[in-house]
Image 1 (cartoon, rainbow, N blue to C red):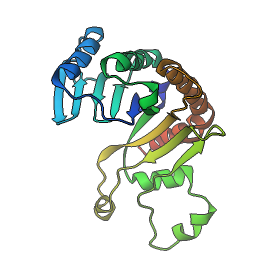
Image 2: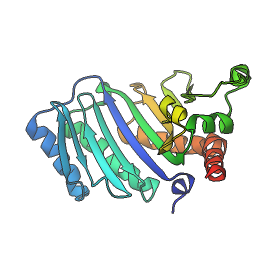
Image 3: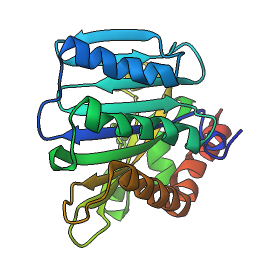
Image 4: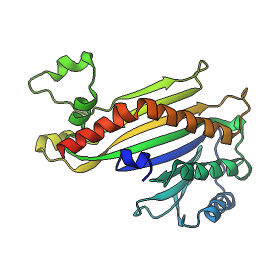
Length: 248
């Protein structure tokens, strides 16, 4: 088990290359692109055309670990659930970025932003909003509301976007997503579902730096992992996991 697997029931690492212009959607171009990826990952066998300009190539999602690649009108995506290592996920993402310029005609001029997301799923059967509020707190400004006799938190999904550079082109975002609904609270019947913690690094295009997609992704990975270690693991992931363990 690698470090990230020890922090959650499931984790994933996704990459997205967002473009300013529409990507090619011609049959030959799309099939050639996915065919080239399939040569590197032969177990990617489920091809789908979901919309006129939305395509996906996936492994069997019933597995504990699986890969997927997506092509939308203005976005190329790559993801892997429970990779054996971060390097395994990054190799897949780098292949997609390597193919994009000459198979899909994507250039730095056309790149709006590159995203790298680390996602963590923590299974909990109970009131997820109460758990998040009790474990992470909402701050003094909300204490008065929470003290109301019948007051119970709902839709507690704290998030923060942080600017990391003076030009505001590099950012990170942490967001928590719960799945408790008012109907669950009313019936006092909570399905087993996941609390999701997302940590995303984003680099908006900066033509003055003249970096390749590969170099940009490496920087996002290195800085993102450092920030997760310093500001997410002990502050969010481990407290939530501990709270879930105590209530289970």
